[in-house]
Image (cartoon, rainbow, N blue to C red; front, side, top):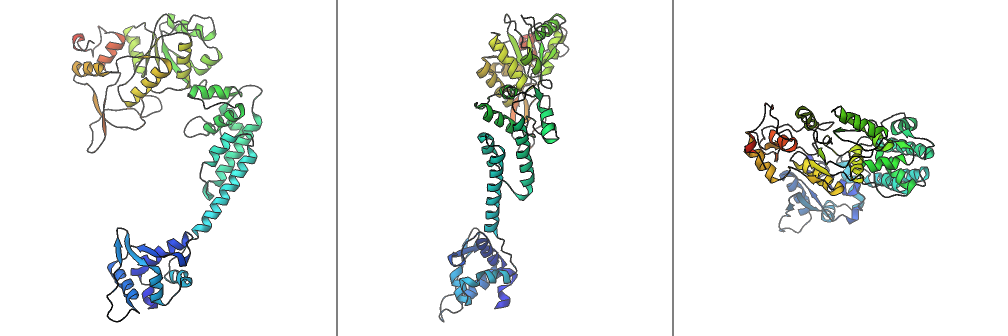
Length: 429
């Protein structure tokens, strides 16, 4: 019998019992376990359960489920002449380890309580920030990094508010040795810096990237104001500040200009509201406008709405500039269009079904069948959308890019010398 108890065919039974013991179940409270027993294992366990029964009794049959055979543990112990106190020994004799999961949970709970207490003491006036930190899991592998994060935020807290502006990169380097540690992106901890600023200033959640940076600036922390730029063409100003002069000089020279977040926040221009702006998604549209000699004011978001884009569009609304938006006819393009329309009251141009029909009628390349790319954006640091043949089983979407000749003609007017032009009568709206 003792040899049978350690047979490999019944090992799944002891592993199932071990799992129950490991999670803290009392041996006497375990009524049944379900184990993926082989036919031989089922026969062996059924044989044990049959022993000691009255002569002539029907053989015991184990109840089967989708996860295996159900074994009644108390009856099994009775048949083996054992008690619940022997259950752990039977498992260990079969060579099955019983991890102390309950003890591990207690250790993890204590570790979590200790690190949360550490954060609360290091950041006593930052309840939003410490609540965020408490929401994260903790383990032996992440404990050191979490302490470093808390210490870094505590060093930052001691410096705020700053007596004069300092860049976020320099501040991160001062606190951590890494200028990118507090970056406002998916790889940095800039979101914790924003939470800390909210705690210190007692303000609600910023609703745009521009609002986040404006919030940090109130504490003297300057983020991305030179690295973030927005491309504009023919955008005129009516004031006499540094940014006004730069915009007007670019207009007079008929050249595009990249306006920085610093230009718009340190020296916000008074914008000329006499002409509507065309806001587009792709820099290639601005380039095409240059080639066609278009004098229409154009602003390019380069595929996303970043802090500098939000800042410029908000200034436009404040100055009464009428806004029109046109982007790629795809999910991300429509999402940006909806945001610009809702927040900045922009009119949406050539992104409806009429534009799609005009494109499909206007050339052999109408809307393109494109495999779905979650989160994909145009240009910049996002993966480009490249037309390919769909593969079997792939999700697809119908996309029209702004580079389509029909869309460009609609946005910028036809170009007599365009070598890729489409006959005008085929795509008029």
